[in-house]
Length: 338
Image (cartoon, rainbow, N blue to C red; front, side):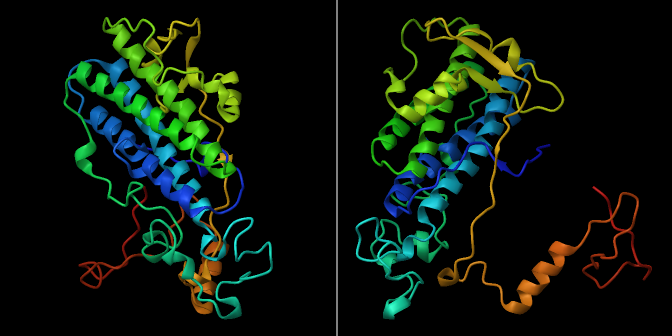
């Protein structure tokens, strides 16, 4: 079972809309080495694990569950980079709130979504309401065939390390593509967490006899030259891993002790989960008809928000009818409780 806390795993730093940076970041979401790939690969490996190698299964699954939060983070970041970009041209652009033009989509005779014809992926405004898509930066859809889950523990761990190393390489390249603060804050966090996950899988392979020498991390350079990355590494974020289990985990049997980088750093499996960052969600976009609620539907939404959930042991006043129009006996059925 999976449980959810309505927080992001890292802060979204505010900055200007930038549909080009958003499209570049799509590679980190739906690309072959993106967060959707790592999430699905590690979860499938753990679901399909055979034999009695619980510490290794817990390790793979713990990272897989964390990757769910990374998919949420990078998707939300893309959303922020896209939100409002239909009427925005940048600090010195032709139209935007800074110079008084097109404050409202469609103002002064312009069409509300004319910018969609100029952005790198029109689907961000045509198929989606200025939000992320499960595609890469070229618009190719994410594929289930990306997932590698052979069932051979050593092979899977080697492949996972390659996946994290390639993901970190691409995010280091992404970092240098844009100075947008929203973009860089998330990319920097993912660079550091990819570093940590390299350590996770390298340590697991080390437990199986591999000696890494001076190979790691990949790419092997001083990432502290990126100020946002340096701040996170000074906090030890690249050396920590939470197991994401409520019922105990054996991950700590592997992820502990000296880091495989051989630089004297020590690894730590954490029992306390990440604190997370509160997030209010996206605002309404009238030009996208999203969420597209009429005044009557909005009133129903507000009425629903004012409702109180039934107390434990009380029967709800709302029941779902059977598809044939009711229960066989014609009596009202008690709702099931989950």
